[in-house]
Structures are given as C-alpha cells and as structure tokens.
Image (cartoon, chains in turn red, purple):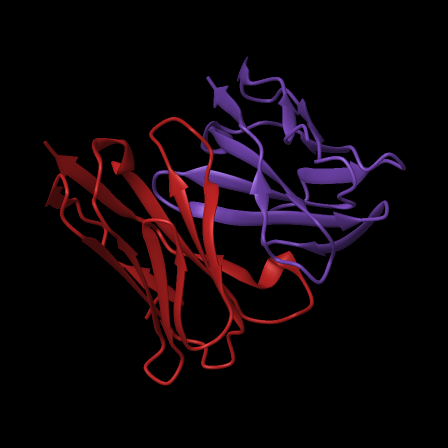
Length: 113
Length: 113
C-alpha cells in the first residue's frame, strides 16, 4: 500500500461543474495536508493546506479532511479550462522535517469546454 | 516578494560528468528542500537545509550532495552522472522549519545522455 494514494486519472469534468479530487493516506499520525497544482512542464504550486478535520474554503477551492477515514479531498467549483493540470496531494507525517512530507503521484484533471 | 529562483533552468550533460544546481529561496526563508521529480517515481525528497545545516537526506546515493550558504542560497551537486539522473530537480523554500508549506522554484531540467 502506498503511503499517499491518488487516482492517476485523467479525470474529465465539464466546464462550470465541480471537480472532486481525492487522496488517501496510510499514516494515521499524519498532521498536515497540502494540495499542489502542477501544470505540464512547470513546478508544483501550493494551492491549499489543511490541518484540522472539516472543510477549508479559499475562493473556488475547498479542501476537506477526515482524519478518522484517512482521506483528504479537493473540490474545485465552477471549473475552468485553466484548472486543467495535475493535482498533487502531500501529507506531512511528522513535525520535524520536510523529509516527512510524502507526495502522491497526482491526479490529472482535464476540464472540457 | 520575489519567488524562488533556480539556475540553470535546463542542462544537458553526458554520463560520468558532474553537475551543480543552484537555488535561492524566498527572501526571509531560511529553509530549503530539494526534490527529484520523474514520471515514474514522482516527487522524491533529496535534502533539507536550515541555517547551513543539512537536517535530513533522502534515500539517494552518495553521488548526490548539497550545501547551504549563510545567505540561505543552496546548491546541490550530482557527481558521476547516470542516465537515470535525468529528471526535474526542484528546490522548495520553507518559511521556517516548523512550517511545511513549501514554495517551489521553477526547477532545473537535467538531461543526461
């Protein structure tokens, strides 16, 4: 079992709809969770971080965390073609070091006009 | 605030050569982490530096080394290059060791022939 799992996609969503991206993790002691967006040929860009159970909203993005079920999700409302990218989930297993941050392999999202 | 800068952006080297990559973090950030990204392995942690000290190193051979200078700029070196070292090398700037919101630079694309 991978430490951080994401469906590789591609996930195809019509423009204007809600895109839902999911991530599960294996270490129950994980403390903080991040979503990065990576356009093809570019570097990852941090778009959301979440530290406690529940929802966190930022513009069209909502991150949801459920530690009991060990999953974190990202919702993108009113999806735009510019949202087409790979979304990486990152999980911090501990407090002490960046070495404890594990990245998932990413979900490719495609927004169709 | 200026972002993370990495130089060079692209490199082509031949097997057996060595290479040095440079990273300047966001002003005021004193921690830097390095990652290797390949299509097959995803993002893999290389090193983390804080105040000129290596805090952790990932599971990479000794051919991979790094350092950080007093102005927080960091370099990584790969000696005796192998074809499998072809990858996107990413540097991330971290506000402080206790914060794991990493801000990535544009990366250096290394091709080994």
